[in-house]
Image (tube, rainbow, N blue to C red; front, top):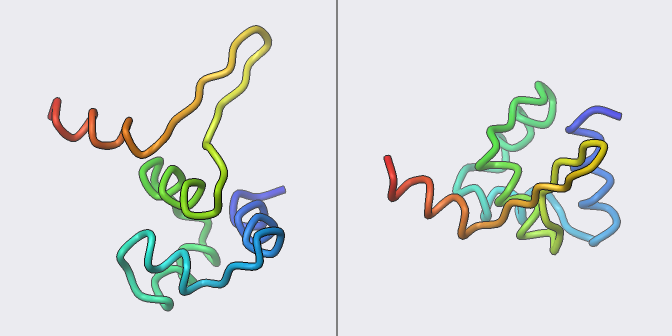
Length: 80
């Protein structure tokens, strides 16, 4: 399943619409639609989307799980 389909599925599960995502990303509804059509989301976008939908972004491998949240974005930005 593509990242766009996963986001759409999560939106449907949480009864949210494109406006919810647009507000979280501070972009227009059209820009969200474009990102969904192209599947072009940054890691920051994915963290913000997960947070606004009540999920947490995580990466899994065989023996580890790495989770990300909004605090991680702020910490990275402060280090730059």
